Amino acid sequence: MAAAAWWETLVVAAAADGTGGSSTTVVSICMFTTVLCLCLVAGHLLEENKWVNESITALVIGCIIGVIVFLLTKGKHSHILRFDEQLFFIYVLPPIIFNAGFQVKKKQFFHNFMTIMSFGVFGVFISGAIVSAGCYWLFPKVGFGELGAVDYLALGAIFSSTDTVCTLQVINQDETPRLYSLVFGEGVVNDATAVVLFNAIKDLDISRLKAYLSYMLAELLELSGILTVFFCGIVMSHYAWHNVTESSRITTKHIFATLSFIAETFIFLYVGMDALDIDKWRTSKESFKTSIGIFGILILLILLGRVAFVFPISILSNIMSGSSERTPITFKHQVVIWWAGLMRGAVSIALAYNQFTFSGVTSDPVHATIITSTIIVVFFTTLVFGFLTRPLISGMLPHQSRALSRGHSTGSNSPKDDFTLPFLSGDEGASGSGIVLEQAKRSLSMMLERPVHTVHIYWRKFDDRFMRPIFGGPRSH
Image (cartoon, rainbow, N blue to C red; front, side, top):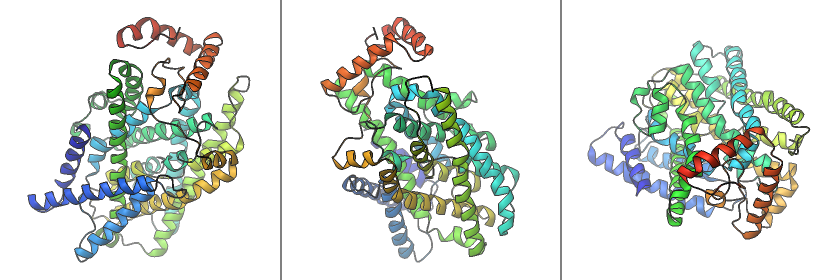
Protein backbone atom coordinates (compact mmCIF):
# COMPACT_ATOMS: atom_id res chain seq x y z
CA MET A 1 0.00 0.00 0.00
CA ALA A 2 2.84 2.40 0.84
CA ALA A 3 4.56 1.76 -2.49
CA ALA A 4 1.28 2.19 -4.37
CA ALA A 5 0.51 5.49 -2.62
CA TRP A 6 4.01 6.79 -3.30
CA TRP A 7 3.76 5.86 -7.00
CA GLU A 8 0.33 7.47 -7.32
CA THR A 9 1.63 10.71 -5.81
CA LEU A 10 4.64 10.69 -8.13
CA VAL A 11 2.78 10.15 -11.40
CA VAL A 12 0.01 12.60 -10.49
CA ALA A 13 2.63 15.24 -9.77
CA ALA A 14 4.36 14.46 -13.05
CA ALA A 15 1.09 14.58 -14.97
CA ALA A 16 0.22 17.92 -13.40
CA ASP A 17 2.99 19.55 -15.42
CA GLY A 18 1.70 18.23 -18.69
CA THR A 19 -1.02 19.53 -20.95
CA GLY A 20 -4.56 18.35 -21.43
CA GLY A 21 -7.59 17.76 -19.25
CA SER A 22 -8.22 15.32 -16.46
CA SER A 23 -9.12 12.49 -18.84
CA THR A 24 -5.79 12.92 -20.61
CA THR A 25 -4.03 12.83 -17.25
CA VAL A 26 -5.76 9.58 -16.28
CA VAL A 27 -4.83 7.97 -19.59
CA SER A 28 -1.21 9.13 -19.23
CA ILE A 29 -0.96 7.75 -15.70
CA CYS A 30 -2.41 4.40 -16.75
CA MET A 31 -0.09 4.17 -19.74
CA PHE A 32 3.03 5.04 -17.75
CA THR A 33 2.11 2.61 -14.98
CA THR A 34 1.61 -0.11 -17.60
CA VAL A 35 5.01 0.64 -19.11
CA LEU A 36 6.59 0.50 -15.65
CA CYS A 37 5.02 -2.91 -15.04
CA LEU A 38 6.42 -4.02 -18.40
CA CYS A 39 9.87 -2.94 -17.23
CA LEU A 40 9.45 -4.89 -13.99
CA VAL A 41 8.49 -8.05 -15.87
CA ALA A 42 11.25 -7.63 -18.46
CA GLY A 43 13.81 -6.97 -15.73
CA HIS A 44 12.75 -10.13 -13.92
CA LEU A 45 12.93 -12.25 -17.08
CA LEU A 46 16.37 -10.86 -17.95
CA GLU A 47 17.69 -11.02 -14.39
CA GLU A 48 20.19 -13.78 -15.18
CA ASN A 49 21.20 -12.36 -18.57
CA LYS A 50 24.94 -11.77 -18.91
CA TRP A 51 24.70 -8.62 -20.97
CA VAL A 52 21.80 -6.46 -19.78
CA ASN A 53 20.49 -5.08 -16.50
CA GLU A 54 17.46 -3.13 -15.32
CA SER A 55 18.91 0.20 -16.43
CA ILE A 56 19.56 -0.98 -19.97
CA THR A 57 16.14 -2.64 -20.11
CA ALA A 58 14.36 0.53 -18.98
CA LEU A 59 16.31 2.67 -21.46
CA VAL A 60 15.49 0.40 -24.39
CA ILE A 61 11.81 0.12 -23.44
CA GLY A 62 11.68 3.88 -22.97
CA CYS A 63 13.07 4.37 -26.48
CA ILE A 64 10.52 1.95 -27.95
CA ILE A 65 7.63 3.67 -26.16
CA GLY A 66 9.02 7.05 -27.22
CA VAL A 67 9.01 5.94 -30.87
CA ILE A 68 5.43 4.71 -30.57
CA VAL A 69 4.23 7.94 -28.93
CA PHE A 70 6.21 9.98 -31.46
CA LEU A 71 4.52 8.19 -34.36
CA LEU A 72 1.03 8.32 -32.82
CA THR A 73 1.31 12.08 -32.20
CA LYS A 74 2.73 12.61 -35.70
CA GLY A 75 6.01 13.99 -34.44
CA LYS A 76 4.65 16.40 -31.84
CA HIS A 77 6.24 14.80 -28.79
CA SER A 78 7.54 11.50 -27.40
CA HIS A 79 6.43 11.71 -23.75
CA ILE A 80 3.59 10.12 -21.85
CA LEU A 81 4.17 12.43 -18.87
CA ARG A 82 5.99 15.73 -18.52
CA PHE A 83 8.81 15.43 -15.99
CA ASP A 84 9.50 18.32 -13.62
CA GLU A 85 13.10 18.03 -12.44
CA GLN A 86 12.08 19.08 -8.92
CA LEU A 87 10.08 15.85 -8.66
CA PHE A 88 13.38 14.01 -8.70
CA PHE A 89 14.53 15.68 -5.49
CA ILE A 90 11.10 15.35 -3.84
CA TYR A 91 9.99 11.81 -4.74
CA VAL A 92 12.65 9.92 -6.68
CA LEU A 93 16.07 10.49 -5.11
CA PRO A 94 15.25 10.02 -1.36
CA PRO A 95 13.95 6.41 -1.76
CA ILE A 96 17.03 5.47 -3.80
CA ILE A 97 19.50 6.88 -1.27
CA PHE A 98 17.55 5.65 1.77
CA ASN A 99 17.36 2.10 0.43
CA ALA A 100 21.11 2.15 -0.23
CA GLY A 101 21.72 3.08 3.41
CA PHE A 102 19.12 0.62 4.70
CA GLN A 103 20.62 -2.29 2.75
CA VAL A 104 24.29 -1.34 3.13
CA LYS A 105 26.67 -4.01 4.37
CA LYS A 106 27.69 -2.20 7.52
CA LYS A 107 30.76 -4.20 8.48
CA GLN A 108 32.57 -3.72 5.19
CA PHE A 109 31.26 -0.18 4.75
CA PHE A 110 32.62 1.09 8.06
CA HIS A 111 35.74 -1.08 7.87
CA ASN A 112 36.61 0.72 4.62
CA PHE A 113 34.96 3.99 5.63
CA MET A 114 37.93 6.30 5.06
CA THR A 115 38.73 4.82 1.65
CA ILE A 116 35.07 4.98 0.59
CA MET A 117 34.76 8.59 1.73
CA SER A 118 37.98 9.46 -0.08
CA PHE A 119 36.61 7.98 -3.31
CA GLY A 120 33.12 9.37 -2.84
CA VAL A 121 33.93 12.88 -1.56
CA PHE A 122 37.40 13.86 -2.71
CA GLY A 123 36.85 11.94 -5.93
CA VAL A 124 33.78 14.00 -6.78
CA PHE A 125 35.64 17.27 -6.23
CA ILE A 126 38.66 16.11 -8.25
CA SER A 127 36.53 14.71 -11.07
CA GLY A 128 34.25 17.76 -11.00
CA ALA A 129 37.20 20.13 -11.22
CA ILE A 130 38.64 18.24 -14.20
CA VAL A 131 35.29 18.13 -16.03
CA SER A 132 34.59 21.82 -15.36
CA ALA A 133 38.07 22.99 -16.36
CA GLY A 134 38.15 20.66 -19.35
CA CYS A 135 34.79 21.86 -20.64
CA TYR A 136 35.82 25.50 -20.16
CA TRP A 137 39.02 24.89 -22.13
CA LEU A 138 37.85 22.47 -24.83
CA PHE A 139 34.27 23.52 -25.65
CA PRO A 140 35.37 26.73 -27.44
CA LYS A 141 37.75 24.67 -29.56
CA VAL A 142 34.78 22.85 -31.12
CA GLY A 143 32.79 26.03 -31.55
CA PHE A 144 30.71 25.80 -28.38
CA GLY A 145 31.54 28.34 -25.71
CA GLU A 146 28.44 30.26 -24.69
CA LEU A 147 28.10 28.85 -21.17
CA GLY A 148 28.56 30.88 -18.00
CA ALA A 149 30.89 30.11 -15.10
CA VAL A 150 28.11 28.60 -12.99
CA ASP A 151 27.09 26.34 -15.89
CA TYR A 152 30.63 25.02 -16.24
CA LEU A 153 30.80 24.31 -12.51
CA ALA A 154 27.40 22.61 -12.69
CA LEU A 155 28.65 20.38 -15.51
CA GLY A 156 31.44 19.21 -13.21
CA ALA A 157 28.91 18.13 -10.58
CA ILE A 158 26.53 16.62 -13.14
CA PHE A 159 29.13 14.36 -14.75
CA SER A 160 30.82 13.41 -11.48
CA SER A 161 27.79 11.38 -10.42
CA THR A 162 28.14 7.67 -11.19
CA ASP A 163 25.90 4.64 -11.67
CA THR A 164 27.61 1.46 -10.41
CA VAL A 165 24.67 -0.93 -10.86
CA CYS A 166 26.17 -2.72 -13.88
CA THR A 167 29.42 -3.49 -12.08
CA LEU A 168 27.79 -4.51 -8.79
CA GLN A 169 25.70 -7.11 -10.63
CA VAL A 170 28.90 -8.80 -11.82
CA ILE A 171 31.19 -8.49 -8.79
CA ASN A 172 30.87 -11.38 -6.35
CA GLN A 173 30.90 -9.93 -2.85
CA ASP A 174 31.80 -13.26 -1.25
CA GLU A 175 34.92 -13.63 -3.42
CA THR A 176 36.05 -10.00 -3.16
CA PRO A 177 34.19 -8.40 -0.24
CA ARG A 178 36.42 -5.33 -0.02
CA LEU A 179 36.17 -4.59 -3.75
CA TYR A 180 32.38 -4.92 -3.63
CA SER A 181 32.21 -2.67 -0.57
CA LEU A 182 34.40 0.00 -2.19
CA VAL A 183 32.41 0.04 -5.44
CA PHE A 184 29.04 0.07 -3.66
CA GLY A 185 30.08 2.59 -1.01
CA GLU A 186 31.68 4.95 -3.49
CA GLY A 187 28.59 4.83 -5.71
CA VAL A 188 26.29 5.87 -2.87
CA VAL A 189 28.54 8.53 -1.33
CA ASN A 190 29.45 9.78 -4.80
CA ASP A 191 25.82 10.42 -5.75
CA ALA A 192 25.12 12.16 -2.46
CA THR A 193 28.23 14.33 -2.72
CA ALA A 194 27.47 15.23 -6.34
CA VAL A 195 24.01 16.44 -5.33
CA VAL A 196 25.44 18.40 -2.39
CA LEU A 197 28.03 20.00 -4.67
CA PHE A 198 25.37 20.80 -7.25
CA ASN A 199 23.14 22.38 -4.60
CA ALA A 200 26.02 24.51 -3.41
CA ILE A 201 26.60 25.68 -6.97
CA LYS A 202 23.00 26.28 -7.90
CA ASP A 203 21.59 27.29 -4.48
CA LEU A 204 18.28 25.46 -4.87
CA ASP A 205 15.06 26.87 -3.44
CA ILE A 206 14.51 24.22 -0.78
CA SER A 207 11.24 25.72 0.43
CA ARG A 208 9.49 23.87 -2.40
CA LEU A 209 10.53 20.45 -1.16
CA LYS A 210 7.69 18.91 0.83
CA ALA A 211 8.60 15.28 1.61
CA TYR A 212 10.60 13.15 4.04
CA LEU A 213 11.13 14.56 7.52
CA SER A 214 14.83 13.86 7.98
CA TYR A 215 15.55 14.95 4.43
CA MET A 216 13.66 18.22 4.81
CA LEU A 217 14.96 18.99 8.31
CA ALA A 218 18.53 18.73 7.08
CA GLU A 219 17.78 20.87 4.04
CA LEU A 220 16.09 23.56 6.15
CA LEU A 221 19.18 23.64 8.37
CA GLU A 222 21.29 23.99 5.21
CA LEU A 223 22.83 20.56 5.75
CA SER A 224 22.90 17.66 3.32
CA GLY A 225 19.48 16.06 3.09
CA ILE A 226 20.85 13.33 0.82
CA LEU A 227 23.56 12.24 3.26
CA THR A 228 21.03 12.51 6.10
CA VAL A 229 18.68 10.11 4.34
CA PHE A 230 21.56 7.69 3.67
CA PHE A 231 22.74 7.54 7.28
CA CYS A 232 19.12 7.53 8.47
CA GLY A 233 18.74 4.30 6.49
CA ILE A 234 21.82 2.82 8.15
CA VAL A 235 20.63 3.69 11.66
CA MET A 236 17.09 2.44 11.03
CA SER A 237 18.37 -0.86 9.65
CA HIS A 238 20.32 -1.31 12.87
CA TYR A 239 17.86 -0.21 15.58
CA ALA A 240 14.35 -0.26 14.11
CA TRP A 241 15.01 -3.81 12.90
CA HIS A 242 14.73 -5.15 16.45
CA ASN A 243 11.36 -3.57 17.17
CA VAL A 244 9.25 -5.20 14.46
CA THR A 245 8.07 -8.75 13.83
CA GLU A 246 9.75 -11.10 11.37
CA SER A 247 6.99 -10.61 8.80
CA SER A 248 7.27 -6.83 9.18
CA ARG A 249 11.01 -7.04 8.62
CA ILE A 250 10.53 -8.85 5.34
CA THR A 251 7.77 -6.47 4.26
CA THR A 252 9.80 -3.39 5.19
CA LYS A 253 12.87 -4.61 3.34
CA HIS A 254 10.92 -5.28 0.17
CA ILE A 255 8.97 -2.00 0.35
CA PHE A 256 12.17 0.07 0.50
CA ALA A 257 13.79 -1.99 -2.25
CA THR A 258 10.69 -1.70 -4.43
CA LEU A 259 10.45 2.07 -4.00
CA SER A 260 14.11 2.42 -4.92
CA PHE A 261 13.76 0.18 -7.97
CA ILE A 262 10.63 1.96 -9.21
CA ALA A 263 12.30 5.35 -8.76
CA GLU A 264 15.36 4.34 -10.78
CA THR A 265 13.25 2.69 -13.47
CA PHE A 266 11.07 5.81 -13.68
CA ILE A 267 14.13 7.93 -14.49
CA PHE A 268 15.56 5.59 -17.12
CA LEU A 269 12.17 5.18 -18.77
CA TYR A 270 11.83 8.92 -19.05
CA VAL A 271 15.37 9.27 -20.41
CA GLY A 272 14.58 6.68 -23.07
CA MET A 273 11.49 8.60 -24.17
CA ASP A 274 13.22 11.98 -23.89
CA ALA A 275 15.91 10.86 -26.32
CA LEU A 276 13.29 11.32 -29.06
CA ASP A 277 12.04 14.71 -27.86
CA ILE A 278 11.96 16.51 -31.19
CA ASP A 279 11.67 19.95 -29.54
CA LYS A 280 15.05 19.66 -27.83
CA TRP A 281 16.77 18.47 -30.98
CA ARG A 282 15.19 21.30 -32.98
CA THR A 283 16.09 23.87 -30.34
CA SER A 284 19.71 22.74 -30.35
CA LYS A 285 21.18 24.53 -33.36
CA GLU A 286 24.69 23.09 -33.16
CA SER A 287 26.07 21.22 -36.15
CA PHE A 288 26.57 17.47 -36.11
CA LYS A 289 30.34 17.97 -35.94
CA THR A 290 30.05 20.26 -32.91
CA SER A 291 27.66 17.86 -31.17
CA ILE A 292 30.06 14.96 -31.70
CA GLY A 293 32.89 17.14 -30.39
CA ILE A 294 30.96 17.98 -27.22
CA PHE A 295 30.11 14.31 -26.67
CA GLY A 296 33.73 13.25 -27.21
CA ILE A 297 35.01 15.91 -24.81
CA LEU A 298 32.58 14.84 -22.08
CA ILE A 299 33.48 11.14 -22.44
CA LEU A 300 37.21 11.95 -22.41
CA LEU A 301 36.88 14.13 -19.31
CA ILE A 302 34.82 11.47 -17.53
CA LEU A 303 37.58 8.92 -18.21
CA LEU A 304 40.36 11.27 -17.11
CA GLY A 305 38.41 12.45 -14.08
CA ARG A 306 38.18 8.89 -12.78
CA VAL A 307 41.86 8.19 -13.45
CA ALA A 308 42.88 11.35 -11.59
CA PHE A 309 41.64 10.11 -8.22
CA VAL A 310 40.95 6.35 -8.29
CA PHE A 311 44.55 5.21 -8.72
CA PRO A 312 46.23 7.82 -6.45
CA ILE A 313 43.70 7.30 -3.64
CA SER A 314 44.01 3.49 -3.98
CA ILE A 315 47.79 3.70 -3.72
CA LEU A 316 47.51 6.04 -0.72
CA SER A 317 45.01 3.68 0.94
CA ASN A 318 47.37 0.72 0.45
CA ILE A 319 50.25 2.68 1.98
CA MET A 320 48.20 3.78 5.00
CA SER A 321 46.84 0.27 5.64
CA GLY A 322 50.08 -1.52 4.83
CA SER A 323 50.60 -2.76 8.39
CA SER A 324 47.00 -3.86 8.90
CA GLU A 325 45.32 -7.10 7.89
CA ARG A 326 43.13 -5.46 5.28
CA THR A 327 43.31 -6.83 1.76
CA PRO A 328 45.25 -4.38 -0.44
CA ILE A 329 43.57 -2.80 -3.44
CA THR A 330 45.38 -4.54 -6.29
CA PHE A 331 45.89 -2.91 -9.68
CA LYS A 332 43.16 -5.08 -11.20
CA HIS A 333 40.77 -4.03 -8.45
CA GLN A 334 41.70 -0.41 -9.09
CA VAL A 335 40.81 -0.85 -12.77
CA VAL A 336 37.44 -2.34 -11.78
CA ILE A 337 36.75 0.58 -9.41
CA TRP A 338 37.71 3.02 -12.17
CA TRP A 339 35.45 1.27 -14.68
CA ALA A 340 32.54 0.99 -12.24
CA GLY A 341 32.30 4.78 -12.02
CA LEU A 342 32.22 5.45 -15.76
CA MET A 343 28.48 4.87 -16.15
CA ARG A 344 26.21 7.88 -15.77
CA GLY A 345 22.59 7.50 -14.72
CA ALA A 346 19.55 8.99 -13.04
CA VAL A 347 21.32 11.58 -10.89
CA SER A 348 23.22 13.06 -13.84
CA ILE A 349 20.01 13.38 -15.86
CA ALA A 350 18.06 14.99 -13.02
CA LEU A 351 20.83 17.49 -12.23
CA ALA A 352 21.16 18.41 -15.91
CA TYR A 353 17.41 19.00 -16.19
CA ASN A 354 17.46 21.04 -13.00
CA GLN A 355 20.23 23.31 -14.25
CA PHE A 356 19.35 23.69 -17.92
CA THR A 357 15.55 23.36 -18.18
CA PHE A 358 12.39 24.70 -16.59
CA SER A 359 9.86 21.90 -15.96
CA GLY A 360 11.68 19.77 -18.53
CA VAL A 361 11.47 22.42 -21.28
CA THR A 362 14.06 24.88 -22.58
CA SER A 363 14.04 27.41 -25.40
CA ASP A 364 17.75 28.21 -25.09
CA PRO A 365 19.76 26.50 -27.89
CA VAL A 366 22.86 26.24 -25.69
CA HIS A 367 20.95 24.61 -22.85
CA ALA A 368 19.15 22.29 -25.27
CA THR A 369 22.55 21.18 -26.58
CA ILE A 370 23.75 20.38 -23.06
CA ILE A 371 20.58 18.37 -22.34
CA THR A 372 20.84 16.34 -25.55
CA SER A 373 24.56 15.78 -24.93
CA THR A 374 23.81 14.56 -21.40
CA ILE A 375 21.20 12.14 -22.74
CA ILE A 376 23.70 10.81 -25.29
CA VAL A 377 26.38 10.40 -22.61
CA VAL A 378 23.97 8.50 -20.34
CA PHE A 379 22.89 6.30 -23.24
CA PHE A 380 26.44 5.61 -24.37
CA THR A 381 27.88 4.88 -20.94
CA THR A 382 24.91 2.78 -19.83
CA LEU A 383 24.62 0.73 -23.01
CA VAL A 384 28.22 0.47 -24.26
CA PHE A 385 30.10 0.45 -20.96
CA GLY A 386 27.29 -1.63 -19.44
CA PHE A 387 27.59 -4.27 -22.15
CA LEU A 388 31.38 -4.37 -21.73
CA THR A 389 31.34 -4.62 -17.93
CA ARG A 390 30.95 -8.39 -17.63
CA PRO A 391 33.64 -9.27 -20.23
CA LEU A 392 36.03 -6.79 -18.61
CA ILE A 393 35.55 -8.10 -15.09
CA SER A 394 35.67 -11.70 -16.33
CA GLY A 395 39.06 -10.92 -17.84
CA MET A 396 40.38 -8.96 -14.86
CA LEU A 397 38.93 -11.25 -12.18
CA PRO A 398 38.53 -14.77 -13.65
CA HIS A 399 37.37 -16.26 -10.33
CA GLN A 400 34.35 -13.94 -10.44
CA SER A 401 33.06 -15.44 -13.68
CA ARG A 402 33.69 -18.98 -12.48
CA ALA A 403 31.78 -18.35 -9.28
CA LEU A 404 28.90 -16.74 -11.16
CA SER A 405 28.78 -19.54 -13.71
CA ARG A 406 28.36 -22.02 -10.86
CA GLY A 407 25.37 -20.01 -9.70
CA HIS A 408 27.27 -18.61 -6.75
CA SER A 409 25.15 -16.01 -5.02
CA THR A 410 26.36 -12.45 -5.05
CA GLY A 411 24.64 -11.84 -1.80
CA SER A 412 21.44 -10.54 -0.45
CA ASN A 413 20.77 -6.97 0.43
CA SER A 414 18.61 -7.93 3.32
CA PRO A 415 19.68 -6.55 6.66
CA LYS A 416 17.95 -9.41 8.45
CA ASP A 417 21.12 -11.48 8.06
CA ASP A 418 22.99 -9.24 10.48
CA PHE A 419 20.38 -7.83 12.84
CA THR A 420 21.84 -9.75 15.79
CA LEU A 421 25.33 -8.35 15.30
CA PRO A 422 26.91 -5.03 16.35
CA PHE A 423 26.41 -1.87 14.35
CA LEU A 424 29.97 -1.53 13.13
CA SER A 425 31.04 -5.13 13.40
CA GLY A 426 28.17 -7.35 12.28
CA ASP A 427 28.83 -9.85 9.51
CA GLU A 428 27.06 -8.97 6.26
CA GLY A 429 27.12 -12.42 4.72
CA ALA A 430 24.67 -13.25 1.97
CA SER A 431 23.60 -16.55 3.47
CA GLY A 432 21.54 -17.04 6.57
CA SER A 433 22.87 -20.55 7.14
CA GLY A 434 24.31 -21.67 10.46
CA ILE A 435 27.79 -22.06 8.98
CA VAL A 436 27.93 -18.45 7.85
CA LEU A 437 26.53 -17.26 11.19
CA GLU A 438 29.17 -19.22 13.09
CA GLN A 439 31.88 -17.74 10.86
CA ALA A 440 30.48 -14.31 11.61
CA LYS A 441 30.57 -14.97 15.36
CA ARG A 442 34.17 -16.20 15.16
CA SER A 443 35.11 -13.15 13.14
CA LEU A 444 33.34 -10.95 15.67
CA SER A 445 35.18 -12.59 18.56
CA MET A 446 38.51 -11.93 16.86
CA MET A 447 37.58 -8.28 16.34
CA LEU A 448 36.54 -7.93 19.98
CA GLU A 449 39.84 -9.39 21.12
CA ARG A 450 41.90 -7.42 18.61
CA PRO A 451 39.88 -4.45 17.31
CA VAL A 452 41.03 -2.89 14.07
CA HIS A 453 40.13 0.70 14.85
CA THR A 454 39.91 2.49 18.19
CA VAL A 455 36.67 4.16 17.14
CA HIS A 456 35.07 0.71 16.95
CA ILE A 457 35.92 0.06 20.59
CA TYR A 458 34.35 3.28 21.83
CA TRP A 459 31.32 2.90 19.59
CA ARG A 460 30.62 -0.65 20.81
CA LYS A 461 30.84 0.51 24.42
CA PHE A 462 28.52 3.45 23.74
CA ASP A 463 26.15 1.27 21.70
CA ASP A 464 25.93 -1.42 24.39
CA ARG A 465 25.55 0.99 27.30
CA PHE A 466 23.17 3.62 25.95
CA MET A 467 21.72 2.83 22.52
CA ARG A 468 20.73 -0.85 22.57
CA PRO A 469 18.90 -0.75 25.94
CA ILE A 470 16.64 1.96 24.48
CA PHE A 471 16.30 0.98 20.82
CA GLY A 472 16.70 -2.80 21.08
CA GLY A 473 19.09 -5.49 19.96
CA PRO A 474 21.53 -7.87 21.69
CA ARG A 475 24.75 -6.56 23.14
CA SER A 476 28.01 -7.23 21.35
CA HIS A 477 29.51 -8.91 24.40
